[in-house]
Amino acid sequence: MTAILDINALCLSFGGQKVLDDVSLSVQPGERLALLGHNGAGKSTLFKTVLGFLRPSSGTVAVAGHAPGSNPAREALNYLPEVVSFQRNLSGREVLSYFSGLRGTPKTEVSDLLARVGLLDAADRPVGAYSKGMRQRLGLAQALIGAPRLLLLDEPTSGLDPVSRHEFYEVIADAAARGSAVLLSSHGLEEVQDKTDRIAILARGQLKAEGTLADLAQEAGLPITIRISAKPGAADDLHGEFGGRRINGCRLDLDCGQGTKVDLLARLGRHQDRLRDIEICPPGLTDIYRHFSRMGPTEDQI
Amino acid sequence: MSTRIGTVFGQELRQARRNLWVILATAVLGLFALALALFGAGQGSGLKVDVLTLTAVSLATLSVYLIPLIALLMSYDSISGEVERGSLALTFATPVRRWEVFVGKFLAQTVAVCVAILIAFGTVGCIIGFLAEVSQEGVYAWLRLMLSAGGLGAIFVGTGLMLSALTGRTARAAAAAVGVWLLLVVLYDVALLGAIMAAGEGIFSTHVFPWLVIANPADAFRLYNLAMIDAAPVAGIDGLSQTLPFPPVAALAALGLWLMATIAIGSARTKRIVP
Ligand SMILES: Nc1ncnc2c1ncn2[C@@H]1O[C@H](COP(=O)(O)OP(=O)(O)O)[C@@H](O)[C@H]1O
Ligand SMILES: [Mg+2]
Picture 1 (cartoon, chains in turn orange, purple):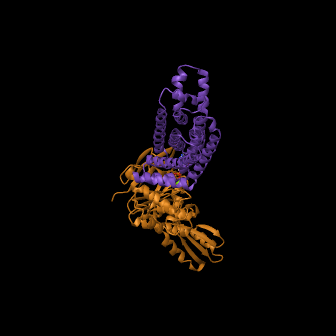
Picture 2 (cartoon, rainbow over the protein chains, first blue to last red):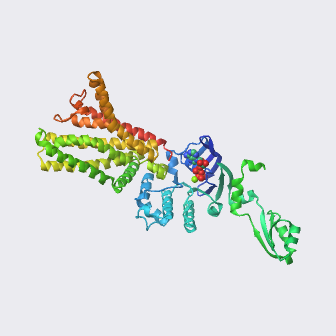
Picture 3 (cartoon, helix red, strand yellow):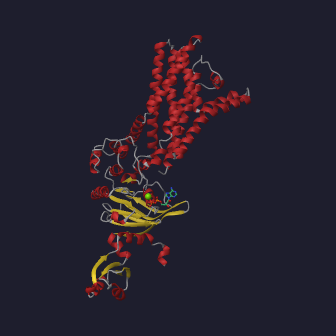
């Protein structure tokens, strides 16, 4: 299978400051890739390079095999920027008709798209009267015009409430099911969990990790925390035997790896009379994300 | 290609209408034209020309100020504003060619300015026709005025869009538009008058000066309109219109060159915008 988007050793600087540093990525048809990164990590810059707005200092980008910004590359992709405000006095339908005209797709598609993002009722109201969520959905509808082969969505769900966010990802899943490759950026791992096929983590312009969520969790190798509540007076003994961190008078946290978890639980079982409760806490998504986005060259050496 | 330009054109024209630009421009131009017509009618009996010709002359002089101002106001924000709002990034991500965006906007705003001129000057022309006797020469002068005013509007729409593409920021585009208007419409004439007074009679005033006048689109427009009217009561720089070293239509050619230059520079510059 050939990748729709192929980024190879991409570097980009703004006046000496390296904003993208040796980034390589590819997205296949029908695949959803989430690009995660803190503010200023270089996500938007990456999108603008794929669009051909910015020129790489070195490295290559190919959109459906074509140079970014070339006519066939722009025909292959659709884009939803981070911040967009449409002309306030145009209606949603007029906005979509405009972009449909620029892409040379049939105007009959417009009503169908408005229905897909749930804006059919508001189609003829001016965009100025739309809520933030409605504007964002209009932006998404715009990005779906002409069944693009590559969808670039820059922080498409920031500022949306959980329900709208959920609906948003359903529309994206639907587009991917129809064969679009999707590259979308986001701030947090929780948000894209189960919503995308693969995840890439960008920090300070460098790609820190890439793979499925399970891959990332394994690669991070973060400890599992076993949280024990002891019966009154028993906490000191348990602390003496198992070590770990005392949280308060009756609570104790133990860290263990995936391989030693069962063994530790078995040993704990022998102290059943001293235990009130055991809680197993696998590393959270936030922990995994923080692990990768913090891991800089200096921290590696420590 | 044509559908993409047509799409930009349609969108832009709709904007001009919804923002009430066309109505506002029509009202301003119409009121000034009417005022000049009434003034002309008041003094017309003392002169040997008809009211229509007389009004065409004074309206040509006034249009030099008004039409560039209207055209610049309509266009200066058109590209820079979209850069700042982020909507141009969306447009540029589609298969539309960048020059098509520039040309589409140019055509739509030019049509908006021309419609305003046509309605305003056309209505006032008809009113004069009803109220006073008009000569054939007057009708021609009026038609020439309307057409060349449309051309002047097109040049300054092109200039405003070019400045918008060059600066890429609304605040800077506004400053540049005001600067260009002052320079071409006001300061240029003052500088030329100073130069001719300093140089006196000679090679400069007969051979260099006329070319300097038509090098400026605003002056070229006025010169063309006045030079075509034999009986025009004129003074100052416009006195030149009776002793031109070239036919008056050369001024039109100068306008055409300006138009092509602004569109070429603007389109080229639009290609380099990072939205
Ligand atoms: N036009 C620009 N000129 C100079 N620096 C820029 C420009 N655009 C972005 N940057 C810098 O590049 C870095 C990455 O920005 P960006 O791609 O917008 O990050 P993100 O989208 O991940 O929040 C930031 O440090 C930002 O300051
Ligand atoms: Mg960003």
